Length: 316
Ligand code: FAD
Image (tube, rainbow, N blue to C red; front, side):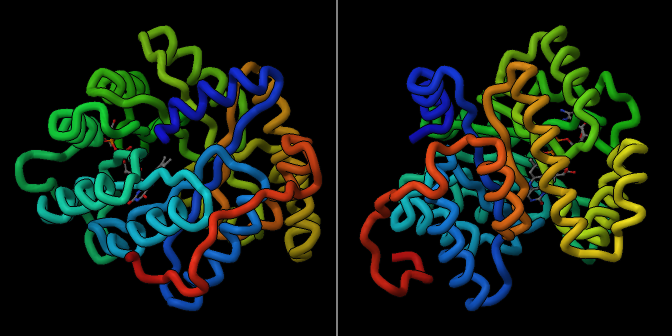
């Protein structure tokens, strides 16, 4: 099902409730993949509206990303949103990925430009001129019409490569005009940045939903690394709270849950209808946040999952 349709259905059925979704990345090993499938099952009990699987820069995880999305849909009762980048790849890889999605009933794509692969400083355009996410959105619309629901990335604090925040915001409008259906933001820890971004986007005619990307703090080092890499603004009160507990892993995790619950409550109070969680392939913190916010009716629902063979690591 297209995520935009699922959002509409959810809103009709749950006036006062918020939906949520979970992002995962493809593990490097077979054992990691098997663990992730078990995690899918446990997290599926919370009824996320969808899950998404990242696409390694330059298509480095193409097969695994497709495999995880296909199996999530077929065997785990989860609606997949497949990330797809359009740089540092052969165009054939792009076409073949989109064709496989059609074949396997994957109807949701997060269309991205992509970062340069690890060993390269700069990204390069796909043959035929796909160099921005908006080009990929337009390409998908041109070749697949309305088959896909298309999501795009948004940057409340601005994309790092574009010092002009207004022009960067304008690019979200360009993505919408090319056919994007909704957006998911880069992580942030200052809700005010997100709220201001929503206002500015609305003022320039962005009407698609812009869902907040929430990354719970799960380890001090991980948090430092990620916020440094993304140059994310970290409010002083978070720095002050973390400083005395930074060597106590459990205390940092507990703080991360508490902070995310506070942030999410404020976001929902602001009228936002859904939350997107960067899980980092870990479940405990995100499940505690969902349960802490009482976004699910029971502790863990008795969701019946579709039958599947015991081993389904390879796509059939
Ligand atoms: P774009 O929207 O193309 O923007 C990139 C830059 O170009 C910006 O500075 C923008 O202002 C500028 N720009 C955009 N359009 C134009 C235009 N038409 N003319 C001139 N300038 C323009 N990376 C991965 O490799 N794999 C993933 O799975 C992945 N998932 C992500 C999920 C989310 C929710 C987010 C927020 C990011 C994700 N990324 C992923 C990272 C992403 O690839 C990088 O942030 C990348 O640098 C930009 O991608 P984009 O799609 O936002 O690009």
